[in-house]
View 1 (tube, rainbow, N blue to C red):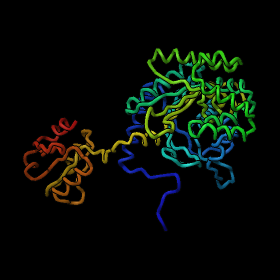
View 2: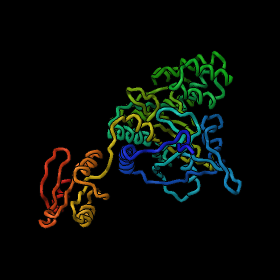
View 3: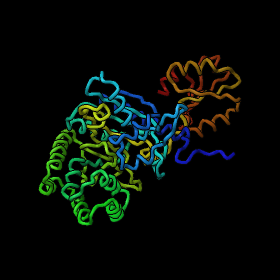
View 4: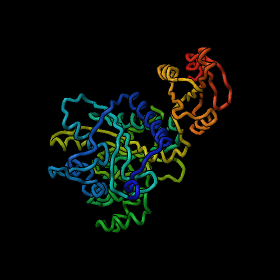
Length: 416
């Protein structure tokens, strides 16, 4: 038998996992500082929940990418393709929740789709959503949060913003009747050439003049110009919301870029949509994306509207873009016993909060130093008979080579 992973999934080595954990720690700290609470939902959902027409949408590529299965009771199930649909189901089945409900969730999602750089069939999403508020201040808060996260991670990004009401208005102005199908194709403009998207729209039944008008309008990335060209009510409403959002973002000092072609292909978006891209570089996919989805929860319940806005960070693409050498260990101190038992010292170091490891296979001093150096462990502690008698240990700084005799309590202060 040939040992290999399934297509589109991968193992993460300790070096890679450390980097990923650092990103997740930044996200969690920022989410919680903005008032978001943790939530965990199942990886398995009922298929009818995932396939609901108000979830991904019948025309979405995601519908073809759901991993489907049945349990022993022959019930149809699916692996979740995002964290938004499970959140909608959770809110819909927990009417006692106080609003606004602000939650974050970090977990695996699955899509049986094409594989490319930063996109696999099993990947992690890091979502943050606010349920229960129609205010554009929610979008402003999420975009400020995104801006802060990427500054902390150290990536120069551009945040692109649009509004589905405006996009619907542009489609109406162009004479397009099948808006949902057209939006799925428009969403591919950053992934494929314009003429290819045009052919796809033609295959969906759009007339040449409709495609021409549509392409002309979505290239106008100026709200003032579009305000004069889009006369229908829905389009004007979208422009008004974008102007309100821009005012809040100015107060928060967050810069964004308006892009009339930004669509987000999922059917549940109802108003603001946004995506985060690298300013420069070979990686062209989005690092984070989201928008307003006001209708999904109400449709699950069969009543009312539950305003909702969310933002999902892609752990895989962010990790790919970082391209920095990962740490090989989290250990701060490596203890080398020299013909003595050093378990008491290891315990004391750990009890005092140091991440501590020790030689477990009886290597010589030289081999242990090579091991610590290869892993990038910053400090080594030598414990021999002389050190034991003196009630001290010898601490070595692996970067400088300096050594000093210290009490164990002093080691903690020195390392910290």
